Every structure is written in structure tokens, then in C-alpha cells.
Length: 241
Image 1 (tube, rainbow, N blue to C red):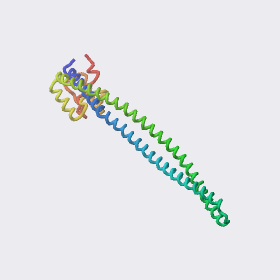
Image 2 (image 1 turned 90 degrees about the horizontal axis):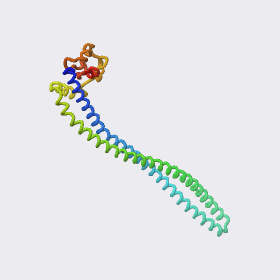
Image 3 (image 1 turned 45 degrees about the horizontal axis):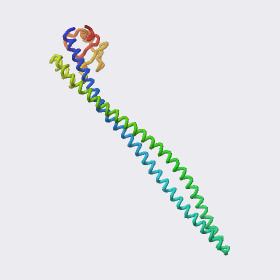
Image 4 (image 1 turned 90 degrees about the vertical axis):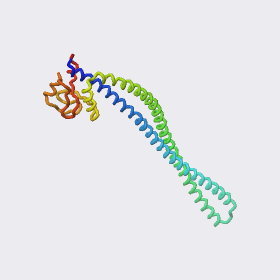
């Protein structure tokens, strides 16, 4: 194998390690954000539960008020009935009867309102229970995911430590001039190397002159994409003995 091909292989091994580092660092950054999204979802659900609870309390308070009015009216009705037993004057009797009818009508209205409110309370309690169940399920899911993320972050840190340790030995086996070229490109665009297939750059996806692509089978030097400037290589050429 030519020196250039050997160096391309070494550069490619370095790039694969650095790509792995990049992927691991991206995952390391993404995982906490994923947890934060879960926590925000929990807070949104909790907010909905709080709203449902507040609405339920309003209905319960209104029902209690109607029940208080009903109790007062029932007491007044009972007093009016007792009073009627003592009334001898026909005119007064009619007045008491009219007042009693009004009390009974209001009591009936309050009874209907109370029954309606009881149905609403039951409905809201059911909705509240469903929402709370959703919160509980999501909190359990978040707790499980937190444990998974914690474990994965520890694994990532261990992997990164190992992969980073592998970088210096890989760099030591690469020609310094080639390594400088690699690093110079990497600072501007990453990855700094691109495979070529059918005269197309595998990173910028631009075409190149066929003669340039043909040179990759036995490159005389580091060849670079005329469009993105990356170091070019051809997989099948590097696989050759």
C-alpha cells in the first residue's frame, strides 16, 4: 500500500474517533434537555389539575350555598306551616299561603340546582381523577427516564474518556503535515474528510472532474474536494492491499 493510502487510513481512523466523540457529546447535551421537556410536560399537567381543582371547589362552594339556602327555606316552610295552624283570619291565611307557596317554589328551584351541581361535581371529580392519573403516570415515567439518563450519562463519560485517550496515539502515527491539513480543515468544517462515490463528494454532494475521482484509486498526494475543500478518499481504494 502506498504511503498516501496508509496515511488516509490513519486519518480516517482519527476522524471516526472524533466523529464518535462528537456524537457522544451531542447525546450528552441532548439527554438533560429531554428530561427538562418531560418535566415541563409534568408541570403543564399539574397546572391543568390545579385549574380543575379550582373549578371543582367553585362548584362545591356554590352547591353548599344552595344547600344552605334550601335548609333556610325548609325551616321557614316549617315555621309557616306551624303558623298557619294558628291563623283564623281568612285574609291572613291567604297571605301566609302565598308566602308559603313562594318558599316552596324557591326550595324546589334550589333542589333542582343542587341536583344539577351534584352531577357537575361528580363529573369534575371524574375528570380530576383522570388528570391526576395522567400526572402520576408521567411522573413515574420521568423518574424512570431520570434513572436511565443518569446511567447513560455515566456510560457516555466513560466512553468519552476512553475515546479521547485513543486520539494522541492515532495522531502520533500520522504525518505532521497531513495532520496539520486535517486540523486546519476540521476547524472550519467537520468532518474534514469525505468519501467519493460516482464522482460525488459524500459530504457536500457536489460533483467533481472524473480525472480527480480516478486519482483516488492511487492518490499521489492528499486530494481535496474542489467545492468544500475536504480531504477525499475512496473506500474501495483503501480496502485494497
